[in-house]
Length: 404
Image (cartoon, rainbow, N blue to C red):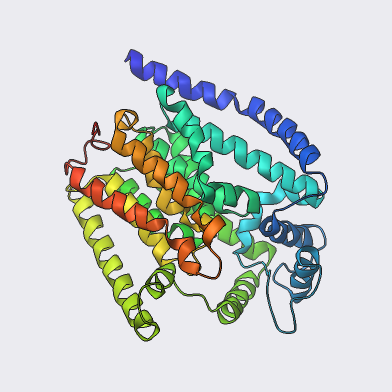
């Protein structure tokens, strides 16, 4: 009872720290703005910021050609060419709700605020997930290139990562089941559906976990939150779905992207068989994913192994595969490093250090070979294979304790 009371007190204190954190975010925003001055990166963020400003302030449809032109001139300082929809806002309308405070600021201040908020919330969440003796390890998460790249680009990858870490790190791994935490997690994951290719398998698993463990507040918050976001989107912009689908259709034509696994195959296989072999591998990935989910449901696999596989598979299915899109495959490893026992494991340390080093491979060696950008996921596959061999098959435990 005492431990339970202490745990509840600690959770309440964390909520009371929110005003302090908001003040710190404002201070950090000023510092970042002063440091960057006129050298503002964040091309991805510009698209979201301009889409939000165009609609909520200028009353212009964010999917319109006018906004696309503004994006091209603002980022490229020129037009992309006749008929090209480069740099279009290609997300569901409700994604803009996540940056509402920023749209009333100039771009430089909006980006600085976004950087500060993402940094502070990610640090706080990692500190919350990692035990006291592993705080230093939590900071090493910022040595992963996909995390750094996502932060610099200013897109929605980091906020979505926060939503996934909140559920998998706090609700599953730490065992926090209070109604406020479940409700916040449900709403965050509902908003995270704005980038379905980034979250779909881990989201399915989260919903299955919530259903199996009777996490009613989470399920209610997720489905009601998603319904509210969609309904509010239609109320504000009745034709947003049509505009979004039009942009997505055009995007698929001019980008002509394939799942990430195709680039990996292309590096080692003759061009004529890449398409067929890629489809076969994707089918096998889907079958294994289903089998693992069934085994987990029956209590024969740990949640960590299933999440690790689904994170890797999400990236291999991803129709682009940029570095920050590898984050779903890294989240389970981050959580694994937060578990008791891994700090004493030379194997765990080796996996973590090599993962950090390989994650920077795309920055230095990419060139004209897109497979280089996807190559770090191969280490995740090796880690999953090793993890499967350690699996006790007892889902009552968070994971095996590794002391290798």
